[in-house]
Amino acid sequence: MFFRFIFLFFQIRALYVFLTEQIIWLNQIKSCMRKDKNIKSKKIRIGDISISYFSSSPLSKNRKTILFLHGFPFNKNSWRNQVGSLSSVANCIAIDIRGHGNTTSGHGFFSIDVFAKDLIVFIEKLELQSVVLCGISMGGYIALRSYEIKPELFQALILCDTHANADTNTQKQNRFDTIQSILHHGKRPFSIGFITKLFAPESIENNIPEIEMIRSSIRRNGTTSICSTLLALASRTDTYNILKEIQAPCLLIRGKEDRITPYKAMNDMHTQLPNSTFKEIEDAGHLPNLERPKLFNNLMYDFLKTF
Image (cartoon, rainbow, N blue to C red):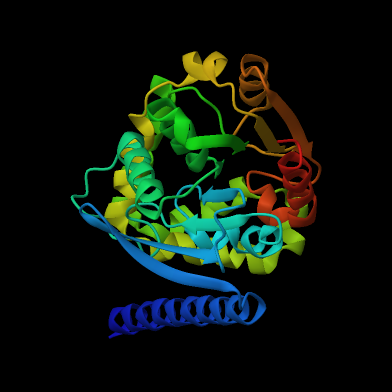
């Protein structure tokens, strides 16, 4: 009887946590919708998947188009502030990458190469012009691979808390261990541990809504998609050797307290890129666009004026 009571207690507790997360997520979406009336959510069929995205409205062919790529394992909502703030100077589009958010998984065999090719077809299908790719973390890997495949599509790159190196064997093994942990213990322990690495200490105290949004984003992605993306990250190719060939203007942004992407990795990338600017944001970790959005947006504004 005692063990049945304990089992029931944990079931009720798990249900309470789940319902609380859903309420938080719905409130965030409603809040965003109230603030960003000009942001329109849409879907488009690309090959074997349906890509979910939102954009500033209306889109103009006479302006630059910033295409925002989220990190792992988040979704397009992490870019809402930037899409709303920068829509006065450029077309802004944020997408859910294959298997994330509301974009379907399709065949389910993920790689950075597959993500990049999805993006290229998306750009061509919408006939986007003067595209500025803005990718954070995993989004940066996708941006670099996309440029490597079809550089003529892109006018500039904004690379945030990311780098051009493939995983070392140790890093690969860490991803494999994370997969095993998620399969055995579920997404919740993973999301709790991951959050502590993502944000600067000050952000953890002061950016509660942003932290809850990221936590909810992680848990709303399926276990299969998260694990498949970890395999994609582990197997990605090195793009370091192409950096010298990128003639497009590049802005590199790093949260100064980022514990995931080292300063050296981004500075090495900066020294290899012929036309790049490297900026760090104080009191920010791996997600400076969420932790210090005004400073982040100002860096983007200034960069967009240079070309």
